[in-house]
Length: 257
Ligand code: ADP
Ligand code: MG
Image 1: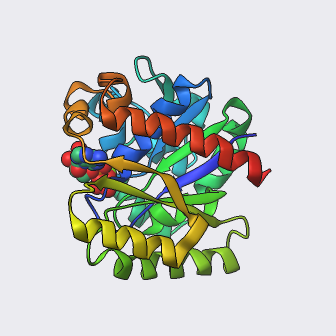
Image 2: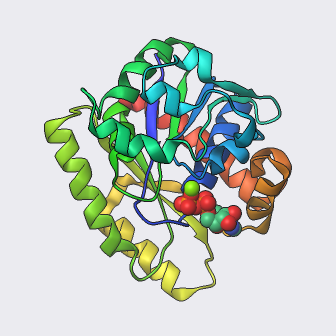
């Protein structure tokens, strides 16, 4: 059965999608079977995996409304090396439509249960909010990976997310835990980033991943080629860091079992 992880942070532009597609590609490279679920109506994880969101006939939207299974709605991202349950703008409507429905926060969980045996890892790219879509992600997952930039307000934003995760753990999904905080877009030459990084480790200890993702322009360029950076430029510092992170995740789930 797959281990299911949400990549979440309610702030936009912090590296969620970059983390999702590059961790997926890194895991695929070391032989893991991976499904990426795009839960953001912007569809960046879909496009960044080389799947054209405008051409999709079935997406995660159909899965949430139970008009398609994951097996029917998924695409295979050939070059990236993993499967994608894609999203496009249609998904923005699901937010409103789900409110009317039974088990509205558990729709994705039900669908993933049926696909779980086909994968080792399922990675869910969440939108930048604590919405019904994110709630579906968090109710489905064994754990949350939180990418964050080591900036002054980073710790403040974390409090809301940690509280939300605690509530979901208590009321809806007893499996849910923070797997770890991933320092991304890191520049060791910036003293403040080093200081915030040290504070994070002091506060969260083992919950801070060992791997640090550097700021690296190749990671930012890759999406315009429809590729994760790990595939676009395997020799780049950013790609190497994400393959290392994939190895760290494999080690972490060994200790979770
Ligand atoms: P989110 O999904 O949280 O909104 P993204 O993953 O889309 O964030 O990242 C926001 C922007 O930062 C994108 O333009 C992305 O290419 C860039 N980016 C993300 N991680 C890195 C990195 N390690 N180095 C350089 N640019 C990055
Ligand atoms: Mg994103």
